[in-house]
Image 1 (cartoon, helix red, strand yellow):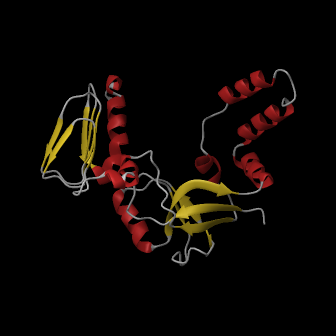
Image 2 (cartoon, helix red, strand yellow):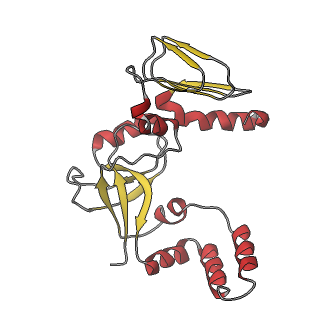
Image 3 (cartoon, one colour):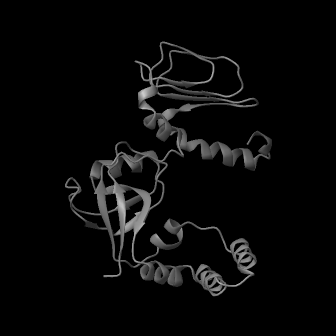
Length: 225
């Protein structure tokens, strides 16, 4: 019917680092395909908890299934500049100067994801398949911690580099300078140590590191990034 189908991951925790799709209905039966009424961007922690409790929100894994005609139609409607660029590239496919055309178009276009550019604007129809496939976005520290569950110790600690953990539980340590990182009495914490900076955070709120980045940029301290 010219619609788009997306894979919706059933949340296992109130995650602030992912976008969500909202699909009213019973998502417990993974064989069901539900109608999506909206996509929402990364929420704060309280909102994420509300999403998870409702049972009607799914992590947006960024996996979309549609016909080529549907994708091109949506791009034409919501990202006209990108559509014109694709047409320009298509016309040059069999030409000797194809690579030059491709490079020129690529550097001219605004960088925007399919999520932002199309899925948040589309008039649909959009449907979601609820999934419990164990998907994880390894772009987050929490995602990395969950993915490497077989490498944690008996207390749920995971350490990379020189680390000594005493009376700690659920701690992720990433050391990069060769110095010893010693932790005492910590729980559900993230410690990232590099040559010139150290980050200590609540592991469950580690997506908030972007706030640190924004503050460093505002205060002219980009050298630490």
